[in-house]
Length: 347
Image (cartoon, rainbow, N blue to C red; front, side, top):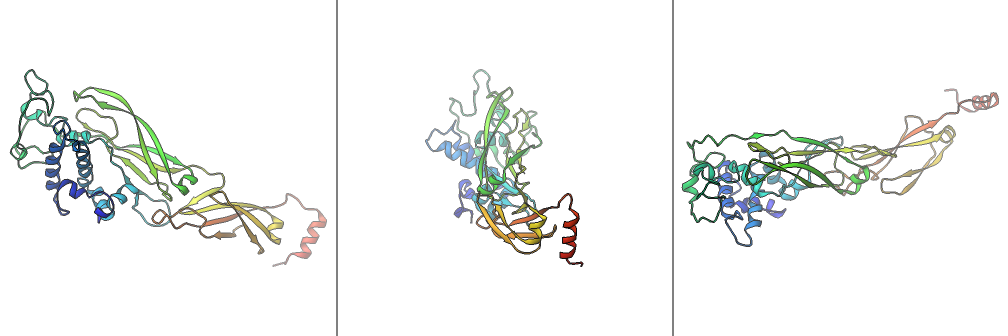
């Protein structure tokens, strides 16, 4: 159950787990208006406003809700692989953007949902902000009533209420080393974007740091999505920013799923007569691997549990696979050829 694995978003909104889409929207509308910091000056209002917004972001999105219902908050934010097998695949990882006012503005179609009703925002004698100094009690059910998806009454018409255009996702590669994948790491990515000023029309530039917690074993191709972190623009829903995990080239290893492949260079003599291989590992150790058998160009050796963590079970690891690059001499003397001819089998 999600309640045992982080926040219980259903309890935050005060709804049951079988709540309908309309019930989720209605609950968010009620709670967001109740705890909006411009209206509610209690100490806990701002944190509750943020929790309510985060809960709505999850439960109003079909994919996030499905993952949350199955894995809870820890699974939703920790990266749940969405494809099986040991080859490259994708994982879904989500983190709340941390701006409940953005969620609020997106839901109501602007920073002040009352403005579209009264059309007096910012006018002399009117209300200068949604929860300005003017005292006005509004019954949420009377005002919003049976609602459409944005919380406005059915049949309500206003030329200023328009469907917002959703900007397409912005994609970036996130380059990580195999050591990053082995240990796990935190990457901080600085972005520059335009954000709306309080007037809801003009914008300013802002720099923001997005933090990505790369989990041990994540596969190449894993996508990390930051919802609505793109440029803000009047009449638009900001784009999601999507980072796709890409492996940096490693000087020793190549990744194959959770396995690591290492190419050992040996001489022809070592291939035929035996040798002791000194094989490096991803965590900086060296393993001595004796070989007494004839090594062919197609030969492989496998060292169990010396690869990368499995994405679904990080406590388990893949294998280290050794391929061979056998060096042949450029030339042989007549005497060497005769000795080899007498020594090597004919078939």
